[in-house]
Image (tube, rainbow, N blue to C red; front, side):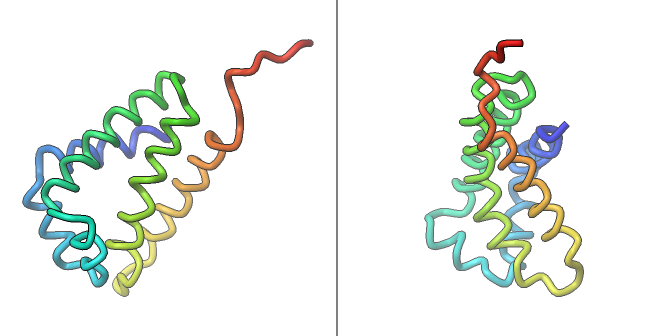
Amino acid sequence: MLSGIFFVASLSHLFNIEKTLQKLDQARFKGIAYFFGDPTLMIILSGIAMLLAGLSLMAGFKTKWAAILLAACLIPITITVQVGQTASLGPLFKNIAIFGGLLFFILNDFNKTQKT
């Protein structure tokens, strides 16, 4: 279930690049995104990363690494777009909650078999 939001976000990043870029340009801390390079390229790369890691997380394949990659995408997006947004704090806390879900997969090893 956690991976679903990354599918939606990845499709937005990959198929609505201009809209995503406009949202970024309206963000208070957009300079952070521009620091890393061409924002259009960053939007495309993050869309690909979120799609692949989201699929991996959903399939239970390399969940720890998928969660790490998704967190690596989520943190700069949250800082750049959500922090400083004064209209609503909902999206910021949504991202914090999602990060908590990702931490669950990062900190727990599901590949170990338990003996009963």
